[in-house]
Picture 1: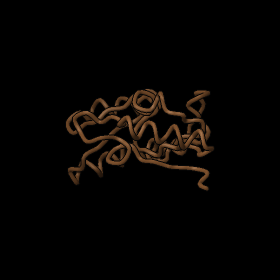
Picture 2 (picture 1 turned 60 degrees about the vertical axis):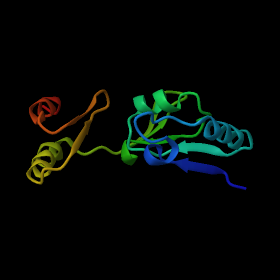
Picture 3 (picture 1 turned 120 degrees about the vertical axis):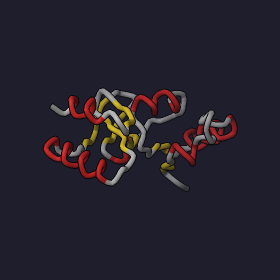
Length: 128
């Protein structure tokens, strides 16, 4: 018997855009798995706010992996169990490198998140 089920959100657990929700069938299966002793873990690049909004009614008793592995959180207790963030001295140089390649960027801090292509000046203010 399996002891844990780790699932990504986008493109895996959630239906396609624009709805991006959990189907009733999937919801029921996850509850059945949890009732049989399987720990349900969401492993996602999303933030804890998104995880709570989308998966708040799922039986998530195990630690959850968010922010592409940068944070492991206990959403039941609201505590961070593990945190591995980019050191602050690397953030601005990293933004500069990404911009030179024209890459899509997502910015996350413990209290804010956003996506930007033309608002680097706002993101730079967060890190100062």
